[in-house]
Image 1 (tube, rainbow, N blue to C red):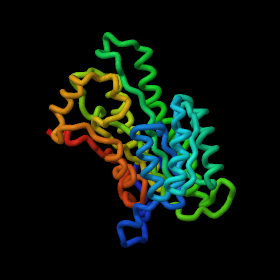
Image 2: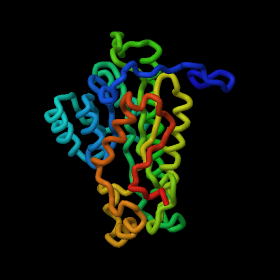
Image 3: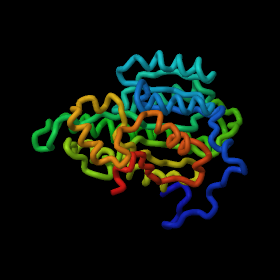
Length: 292
């Protein structure tokens, strides 16, 4: 049964609105702890920068790109917050849980925001011609990894709301509700062409519905949302030819790929108290691709 549900009915007034009447303070993450997976480059790195600029202490995760170590040092120096990099295999729940617990203990005994951003592309073309093992890798990273991250983070948020303390038993200051954000994709809404990627599309559709489901389960101690970027200029699409990218632009009303920095605002909104009444939503940031 969900934390604040009985007999299929939600408890009335099981959440509270922020006691702030100005808008800019709602976007502050000062003193909060955020974890961003897949943050060595691209979208994840941009998210980590945005959170640090808003005052959060940030732990960035990477799989194999050790550039994350330099990026963490850059963030720490530039924004004057704590930032460290951790190598984590998101396809292993034990590894995810251990990393989250370690970061919480090293970052003031608390967790406020988790962004599940790790993901891999499908490059094998039509499903019938692709390798089933590649399918397993795509789904294991994109969907299973998101589930594992959500579970490890959610356990801390439920405890923090129930007990009102850090993991060391100190009073928890400035914690309202946890915020879980998953990077989905517009591919969870449409079937991409000309490149064919059924496995990727299915994994991202699963991420969107996972977050909607968690929003129902977690009401009272955390919010869960997803962001669905369109075509963003990052390394994940390097395998696509100029001709394929030209075909994309034919279908994008804004006529171009997005830049990672153009996603910072969406993630900051969902991470902060500015989105205190937003849960179970998927925010499309796709240059209008899904509009026609």
